[in-house]
Image (cartoon, rainbow, N blue to C red; front, side, top):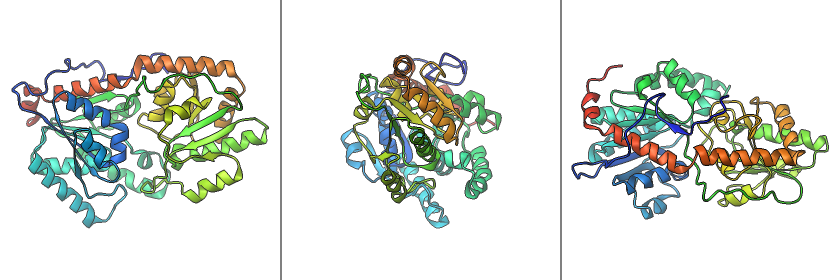
Length: 412
């Protein structure tokens, strides 16, 4: 891996003009975000939406409203409830979800639509085509199950998903934003996106003022995994590694932090999590708000995921100055320079994970060196301001009159 890790950037060797007034004639530009679940929007996109609002955009958020309605309204955004479920496959209800989008797109007439994850991309792009909308920005995140799971369902869905993406991911006048360079290169090679339309903005960024380094706490080393409780986040391998190290007499505590995501097909249920906790191999704290405090109280952060866009928990670990052990897969390897701020291991390999964790558990000086390098990397490349600026520059570029005029005649 290259020693230099870029944080944000458009398609290779392409740059956008500086962020400018989105509406030179005084018209307020209407930006619409489309995402299936509201908590994911608040976690990963709220800062970008607020930056857009501050820049003069009217910001609408179309999502399945559950817990975040009041928060979005208080932030000055316009939430609109979308009757959709992430894992819904009933043809009738899915058609109704598309029909609702057509109605929203026709009545609201957004100037830009930022569609996030697989179902919003497919359904939103269909609705945009029916409604005659241009200015589509697609963000293919959260597709780990389809492309990394060995299950029969994932293998059956994969060719259908690829077919849909070839038709809808990069329509004329659109852009596609990727969170890591591997996914961008693969999408271009597979003919899913035109190279000139493939933009690289690495993740949600991290607030380096909220997440700051703290001295290691005294006592036994604590290894922390922060993620939704999903098999494809490598939670099973984390537990396996904890068991192996306990058998070897390695003194450490292993802690899982994260919600149960029942709408995800890779969900680990509460019975399994409580069984592991009762066994004494790990502790599970569930969803926690005080992530800075949790990071300050740990010694090592692990995420043995099978595939990621760019994991927010690892960006936060960088800013908190903690060493990282993660997998050598797209997304995860973007935040680790092996031997400098962390270690990379093979995915689905609890033994390899145990070896890497053992090395850091036993070597406080190495943890200190890696942790200091993590903080430097966060400051250099992954601050939220960089992500916000790159996103606003992309919006402004898409709104240029010459680009919108060209959108109608662009051919694949």
